Length: 146
Image 1 (cartoon, rainbow, N blue to C red):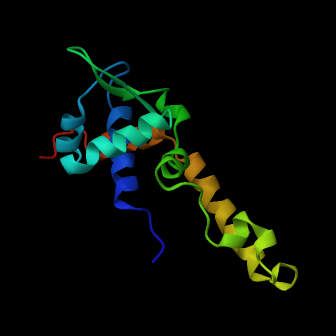
Image 2 (spheres, rainbow, N blue to C red):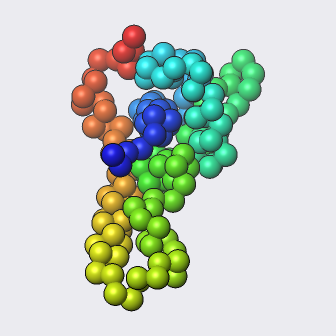
């Protein structure tokens, strides 16, 4: 099965939660974990990776917390997936064609390249401002799922 990891799913939940908040509002990791059903054991690890990728910022202290590092319109699913998983590679030949001895005679390579490009384009178009707008429609009353 081709799928993203649970940590990538959690990372998307973290970014979506922050994108749905009013601009400049900060929340704690524990608040996000509770409201987005993320196990506490994972939330810190996910937040560290997202902060290292420049997608969110963390501030310590009484008025601290988490917030997006830039506007939600400038953060997309591809960036989150790559921050958590690394490059999208459906087959090794899409990233390193020289490594395949059959490259010159393989018609499947073109299909892999096309599928990879289509997936990356779709994930790039899925910005968190749009996802947050849809999230408000799906959950207009409250983000408190617990």
